[in-house]
Length: 342
Image 1 (tube, rainbow, N blue to C red):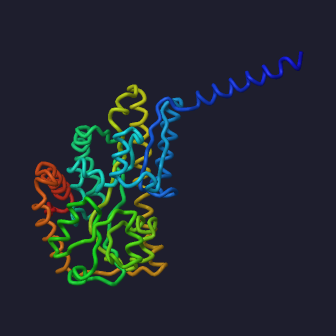
Image 2: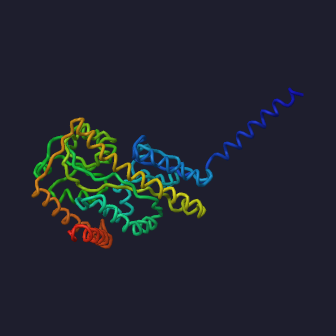
Image 3: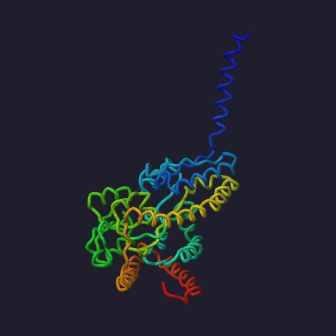
């Protein structure tokens, strides 16, 4: 009898294990990609968010993450979303703004002077951003942050003339930075983010723009060892999902995603800012030199900003979003600094 039932028991065991495996697979799987490297605070905190969603939905909603640009840049990710190979991603401001052009407004150079200003304006803009994303069949789940960015060079630069003589980098598909640098008399070299480090190493470019933590994560600081100690602008991104797939979820599952995002992405924001603070110390210890610019250079840089922005309206930036942003900033400053103009 034992010889008869052993094969049957084995088949039944395989069947049970197979059923358990099928049950463990999420009913709704979102394949997500990002340029953020594995092991960075951005990917680590997203994984915490994903686990939270799985717990809240009893394992019915899951995420598979492809970090480090293995799915290509933002444009490649969008193409994969259109054919169903991906269902969302962590996108850079530059990349997603090719679809949602008004999203680039917070990246206007020398716009913000503190994270308090950033947070106030972002909160005021979020309902409009969500609307704009839905118009492009995307669901904005959370905004992400790179932080304040700085000009970083392979040679010391502390004047406008020095910046003009340097080989400047500009992200591909970013009319804002291209227009601003053009207003300064600079023709930048346009490159995708994954190509920047090799271009610094070869001398194709000499000046780049990144947050302090971002420059360490991407290893740009190993070549660009001189940093202008005044924020050039603010860099951020977004975690967005394919709206059709998101809308196919039950209301309870959609709410689980939104609740998990409300919990984990503020933690990511805090960790990102802490990482940027720690990065300055690390960079100084490893030989990075932080340089000051004079007040006249700072004044010219801000004046050219206004010239560049006006040239982008309305083709690359709507008047509505520009006025809403500057209005929110003025409102905040009127409460704290007597209404200093942005």
